[in-house]
Image (cartoon, rainbow, N blue to C red; front, side, top):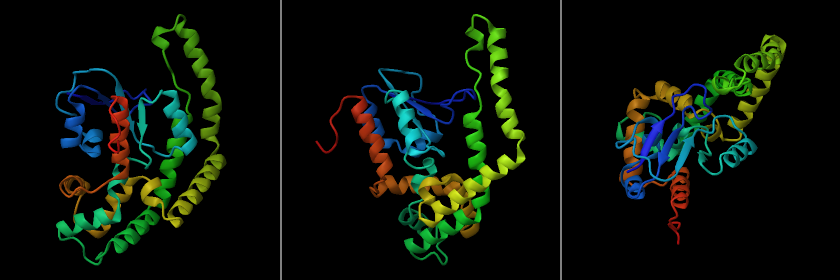
Amino acid sequence: MPSSKRFRNPGSRFTNSIIIAFGSTFLAVFLGTITAYAFSRFDFPGAGLVLGGFLAVMDRDFRSDDEVAAYERKHHGRVFVWRVHEIENLFLDPELVHRVLEFHDQLGILDSPEAVGAALDRTASSIRERIAGRWVAWRLQQDWPRLDAVGTAAHPLDALLKHAASLEPKVAELADQEGIKRIYEERLAEVDRIIAEGHACVELPGNEILAEFLRANTTLSTDVFIPTAVSMVLDRGISLPEVDRLVATIRLQIGLPSESD
């Protein structure tokens, strides 16, 4: 059986990731009962039995292609980063959203996948400023100097003083209100570009877009929408390319041939 655990260490860059440890029955369990959403949001039965290697599955967030590639190289192939912003984006496919709304009798005027797609884009536009603010906050947090291994340092005080010195330029940056405004405006323009190019449901925060879309157009919550979407993916054999890529990565990790072989 596999072990699947979410990291809870706030000092780790693996926060909001999961770990999958491979056992002999892993593939059968994964292909039969586990979905990407369940992996990310819930503990998996049998946690604690660790056999062989592991794979951390994590959200892309606002990382660029180069940052994702560098991150995967740094962790020697033990990190799988979604090619969408976060796992909720997997369920923003207009066809899938349309099917879920139809199942719950919530279509209203959204009587086609195309209408759903347009509504999702309008939703992203309606929260563009919130997304830009989140992007700036995320970047500042990523760039903030981290305090690592003080407890194991030969000279803890020296390590603390060195860390304090590294904070000075970041504190100055955060106190520069004009600089923050400039960064915010740059991110806002980038959000607008992503929406205009039709990539909002891939590159922008899926959790916020989905929650706002449901609030504005239905009486559903994400707690109802997501399980229904997962069931449809499993029961109707709907292919999600990113889940297929995860399966291929796992097969490679445990030395199995690709499904096309």
